[in-house]
Image 1 (cartoon, rainbow, N blue to C red):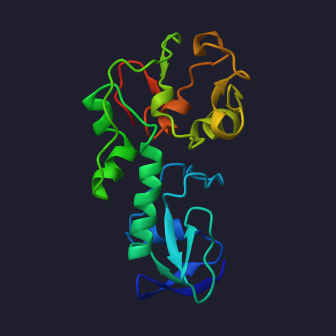
Image 2: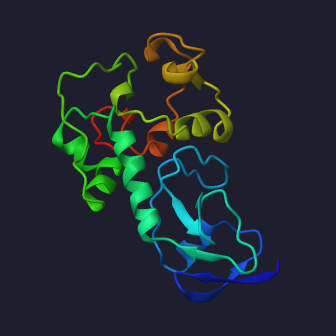
Length: 207
């Protein structure tokens, strides 16, 4: 595998040909926020990992490095873009307790970028019919990590994206209600993958 030279936050560094900007940044100790990133699989749905490359805003998790790139991970444009994305995600995002809110990655990023975390509404409707897993639709932001974990990584194909447009949501066994009636085998991959607590192990805080 060859090497290419790029500018990373003003410093010339060597990158592995074919690696993503996100992996490059992490190798050099630079943290870029992620929600939908699932190692080994292309996703790129949330765009919170956005960076500025030669004046353009692009997602770092699915963009491969190339010779001569000028990459800025915390420029003013990047910061404002991430704040805008977070505001959009927070519009329909709620938690049931302070513990859940404090362990949600979106809420963590919101505080980091000077925004208010998602509100706490103890009475939000959840699906607790499964013996081991609780599904909280109000905490789901359609990052699709649970879909990758269940269908592609574990080959169980229980969780899927259902509907179109504003009605798009996570469903089980082609929208079998409720989750407890689905063919879920309780492997826990979706719980491990979820960054917000949309799918969560019963008795656990949000991951």
